[in-house]
Length: 542
Image (cartoon, rainbow, N blue to C red; front, top):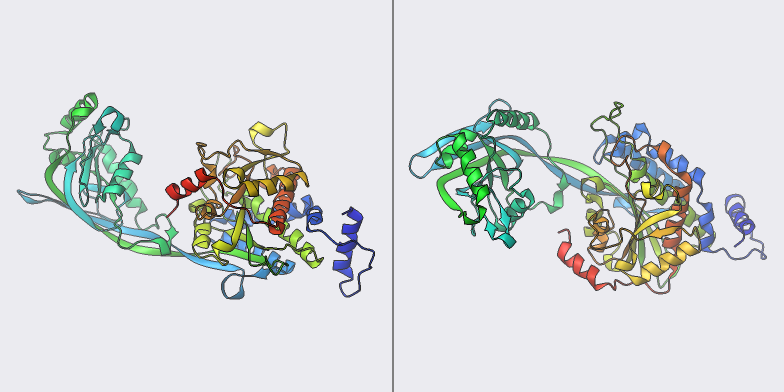
């Protein structure tokens, strides 16, 4: 359609809604309404979303509530249908985080009974410091696991076969211990936890660790989705032990002897055999739960085709960021998140504005479109996980997810060519969705669609690091639009002054056009890459 025709339609919508349209005006096309997406509109929204007033939009804070109020007000003014809870745009969910008030530790041996009974709370410190986990009451015998080394190719394995309900005592050596492997071994075997003997070279550092843990008592721990918490599953504890007591458990006379044993094990790690030490530990935690209310935003445009309107394209972006944190060199401690993901947030708003204008002109999408703003992304994709487990529209009717996260900047590799966007998903999932996306690009902004990160073996793992993954894990094909990382990622300097407005505008038009193509396609895209199917089975977030 010519621009003059689009202007005539827009004018009729705004000024003459009650008059009969002239018969010589051509029918509108949904694709023409990409031209209503403007730099000025995006800038107006992002200036507010990324303002200091919203305090970095951390999930569960007043700042993100202000952002939520602004976004829902915009959708109300545009006239999109609220499909959240009780006729609102809000889909609420609860997050839970443990608040540890203190610990009690009772160490016993088979000959003498209780050897040590101590507490760690705001008033007391003792012989152990819990540095990770340990929010459940756990107990069991202690088994020596050497340096916690594991290298099957070299024939090194310091772990016992049966660790269920047992403590692994490990002499900590930073170069020898693979902490990820230790965590995996404990989780797979059902260990009560690990006891780290780690201050034998400098016992004063144990007291520093005690003070650090004591300072954090009474604060909420990491938040997670409340409905996923399994009360039957014990959380293993990572405890540091006072070095002199650690030596006693090992049957050694001093910290120096512990250091000697560590060197012996490092020199010949293949001959180590794990063994029970004749001690047991009871670990008791005094824990409350901190419940935080969070929410997604769901705004809907119903499809116009009676046969297709029950199928839904989900367009998603996260509107949370990391809030207020450590100050940078300038003293700024407010993380505005203009690019991450203020840019994606306003991209959705302006794509919705264009699509509702198309619908009012009689050119709306054939399938339905859900504009989904999720929170909790920065905490581990929590809002999108909640939606995918509690979908407003059935997952089997969700034909695709278009996810938009950071589309307002240019990375170092494209300083001389700003007309690009990284595409993740697409062909590595579905040839159909890839084809429609390429059509959308050629018929609109003709960006360079970089596939640098579009690899299931890419070490960055971007294909599963934003909200699209919670659709992909359920077999929904997705396209993830992303401008790449930059020096201001997760820093206070991610501010609106650094947004590349022309690039943001073009990318938002591509997002709109891809959504329109999917909504109007005669055939829904299918997941047809077997490698991706295998990945979703092996790496699903359960």
